[in-house]
Image 1 (cartoon, rainbow, N blue to C red):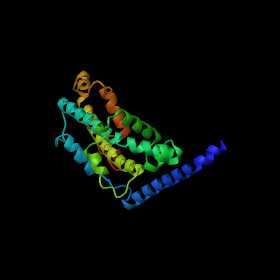
Image 2: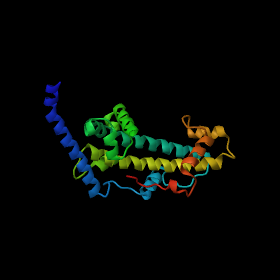
Image 3: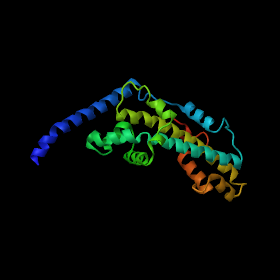
Image 4: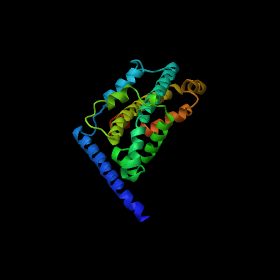
Length: 225
């Protein structure tokens, strides 16, 4: 046992030096770019919303509800691509930083350990060609220096942008549901939302509990590092 420890000691020391270098590079990256190179505001979120809805911002009918759900489904798929793009560098960092596991990596890049586990699992199930898109390539292009932690950190910002966009569309869907529920048959609303959605009234209720109504500050999208 003692011989094996001695043989592995140089390798362990080398790994620890590399891990500390990765963490130090990430700290300098955050300092250089005032947290991240890819930054967004509420205006960027609304730009994505108007792009996905074809410029439409007023919604009042069941047909609009159906279109909004379609748009949100597209955003979900695109957001999943952005999340899956983190999988490979996240897995590489998870094997190395802190001796394995997610605690140190998650803390460094601002994710929850459960998010790390889910992201890697998603990436493993997703073909490489489906783990990237134009935005992923744009975010990763021309980083002044890079390692797996920096890659995850920057891609996380992109993922959060599309999650914030999904939230805005969800707010709109649920506001429209509350307008339509008094006059439209529940079956018609359920059909517009699709088979995987919860019941319309329940969905709207949960939205109000989590994000409030129009004008609630919880609905204001902002980048949280």
